Every structure is written in C-alpha cells, then in structure tokens.
Length: 402
View 1: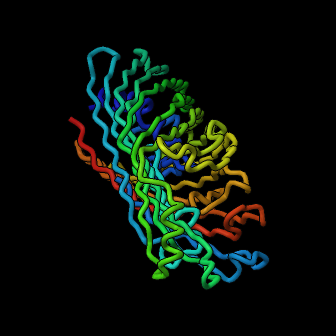
View 2 (view 1 turned 135 degrees about the vertical axis):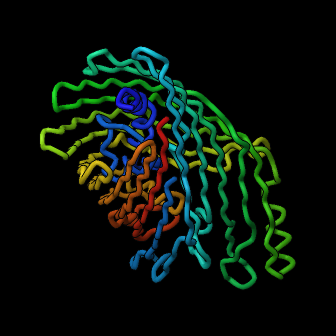
C-alpha cells in the first residue's frame, strides 16, 4: 500500500495538475475535490465531479441611452464537470495512468427579458479530455518526471437575436433568431512535468501545450414575425440563408510551478503560480459558407497569472481538513467585455475534508468564488454596463486503492 501511494502521487502529478491549474477565461480548474479544497494549489502535491452554480447580473450604464435602467440575469444552471483517474504500476519505478477531465467550458445563458440578446443570448462551449500519461520515479523517491498526450474534443453552440427598427411604428423589434451549432471536433496536445522532493520540501512544475480546435457546423436563421406584413417582407429579404459555418478557437498553453512543505507536523502547505497564454485569443470569427463573415469580434486577450495558496491538515489517520485561497487575473481587455463572456478578476476561498480508511478515499469541498465588478466603461459598441458574478462550487471525489 505504501509503495502504491508513492506511485499514485507521481502519476497524478502529470495527469491532474494540468487540469487543476486552469482558471480565468473559459477554463475550469476544478478537476478534483482535494485539489479544489486546497484552492487549486496542487502542482507539487497532486493526488486524486464538481457541481458549479453561477449567478451573474448585468446593470445597464446610466450614461448610455440604450442600456440605462436595464438589468439582466443568468438563467439558473448547475454544471457538473466530471473527472476520473485510474493508475496502474508497471513494476519498478514506472507507472501508467489515464485521466478524464473537463479542462475548459463556458455557458453564458441569459434569462428573458434580456437587452443584450442581439449580442448573445446563450454561449455554450463544451470540452472533454482524455489523457494517458507515463511517469518515472527515482528509487530514492526524490525525483520524478513524466508526461502524456491529451486527446481533446469540443463543441460550440451560440444563439442570438436579430433586432431591427420598424419603420412603420419606430419601435425596435426582434425579427429573427440565430442558432449556430458545431459538430464535435477533436485535437491533441501534450503535457510534461517534474517533481523534486528534498527532505520536507516538494517542488513541482508542469506544462501543457496549446491547441487550436477547428469547428464546422450549421447556422439556422428563424424569422420572428412582427405582425406587420410589409416590414416582415423587408426583413425576410435581408436575412442570411441557413448555411454551413466554420470557426477556430485557440486554447492556451499553461505553465505551473508550485512549492510545498511538510515541515510542520501533520500540516502540508503549498503555493502555486500559473501562467496561461490567453494572448493567443485574438478574435472570434465565424465564417459562413454562403454569406462570408457572419461574426467578427476583436478579443485581444492577454496572458494571465493566477496565485493559489492551500493547506492540508491531517487531524488523525482517517480525517483531513483543507483550506485554500486564490486570485486569478482575467485576460479580457475592457473593450472586449460583452454578454458573450463578461470576465473579471476572481477571488476565492475553499474548505474541504478528506476521509481515507483502508482502500477507500472520499474528498469533499465547498468553494466560494467572487468575480470583481466589471464595467465596460462606455467602450462597448453594443452594450454598456456593469457585470457582477459569483459562483458556488461543491466538489466530491470517490477513490479506491487496490
């Protein structure tokens, strides 16, 4: 059992840390209950489904004639990004493992009535990854190295409304709904990591490569009758036809380094710093096979850093308690803030417990995440205002060691 525990830590370092290091943008770093319980500070530890509830509110800019006085809210959803890991010692100091995770995802689903529906009603990015990894540990247990190949599949769904001014009554009317849905597409990338464990200290580093996923799908345009026949005829003549579409989403590279210590008996502390190359996301462009460019949004994101501090306290041989805090920088410039993704710097605090007896392991975590208020500062071309977001996450992992 003692031998297996060591190899489990090694292989998990190269499967889990790549998933748990994600943060801002449309990343999901909650890839294990123990890692989440330590605030995601896990690059030098690494040994393990999360349920996420988001609450978002938009308040219109009082100085903007269009959005002044408007309010908007997310529809209430509970998201369940699952994770699963299996580890098999191969004899000697070599170990093989496979991880299933959801490293990225996005859902901004606005409830009606929604003033920003021409920009976005619902944006949904789904991603799932499978990663086999191989790790080697020195006989002394002081040094370990490993790496793997990640197979990633993703899908994109975007919906919005078309608004036009009715020349017959002077009102703004919803004249059509756009539904863009891609097929599932896949790609591969790689990751590698090292662990160095001198005495009561551990130093870990991991790197996950970037990737571009090229999506193709269909755009369906459904006209919304206004009841004014001449206006509806004009609208119909100007709407694009249903057609095939293509877009590319660039996913960033992620580099993490962490330092941990067990110098205090029964305590394990860790500090992590993670860099994410979000500057690869220059624009969101959707091209139609018939109509050419259908969507063109400048994004111009920047690279970000995140900082996480976590602690694990062994209360007794069966129970652990965990604490963590984190700060994630957001990559989005103010002029790119929109209903599609109103991102902001994030602050979070976590508390978790772990139960381990014999071969059984249970980890559970409560995580409160607060997004700083984010205003467009009057720079938006379609919707000016302030976004407020909070999230509550409950994580649970079950494990069994053979």
